[in-house]
Image (cartoon, rainbow, N blue to C red; front, top):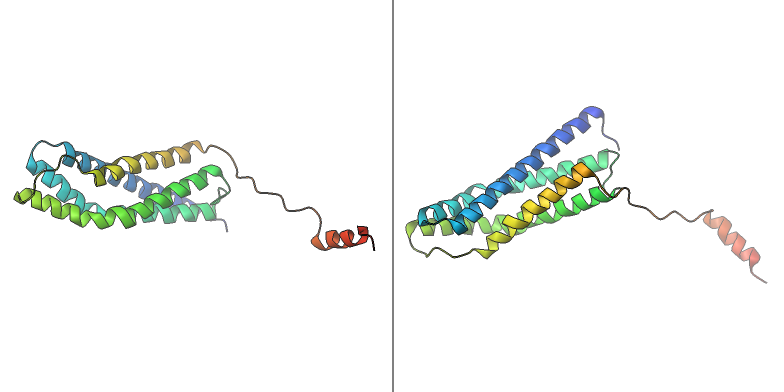
Length: 183
């Protein structure tokens, strides 16, 4: 199934926009995480965690799923295929891992992050030295998204080689093997 030119262009635009939104939201997440870790005053730390937990969960889920779906549409509907080129397969793998992490690891923890920011603002909990659970997605996701972007632009490695089907018809080979066998 190949996409018609108009549909392909629409899918490319949707993919670029959703991917750019994902990268932008991820950049905001990273800024808020490191602001929460390294800001000097309690109010700034509290505000960073409240903003992170309140505003980034659903937009990250939607943008990441939209990038995945539009990427799948482009993979199926264009000459690049889903697993015919190494760079597409690598990008698909990166995207799948990140989408799963956004949906099942990061998004579920964000309400607790917002509640923690609220408790910090109220002065009921101490300001942490580091928040290790948030550092990992703040470093890994932007790095992986950058790698996926580079793969899209550079398109390295070429086609995935498929093993050639055995030569000859199966019935001919079977018949020939019976003829060659001694009786």
